[in-house]
Image 1 (cartoon, rainbow, N blue to C red):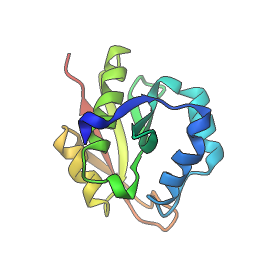
Image 2: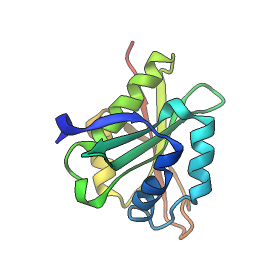
Image 3: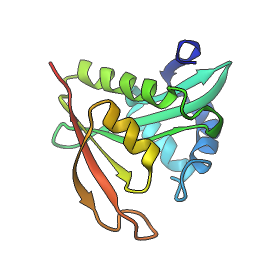
Length: 150
């Protein structure tokens, strides 16, 4: 499956497909307008994975004011989960960040999202803390960091 994936920068014309993945992935999806904002602000860190000309996943990254990379969101279409799509997206955005001089990346993930936690840990992210009541329902998120080697 990974070999059949094309990872590229997101385009405005992709936003509807991206949003459909979002609403099928999270109980509190970002509004579609947020995706347009991310695309304008961080085009080099907003990537999609395509399979057979359909978008099957996306990742959005940004750079925090202290120069730390930040994974804002990563989601994979339900039919394509567990096939390496999320991992390929994550490793690709990390590579771009590293090429741009970023040495550290952080993200927040629901303490209940076992699949995402397993993915992040498998590629070197470490839990460093917890954000209490991070989500609208009051549930918590782990804060995870990864140091990018030189």
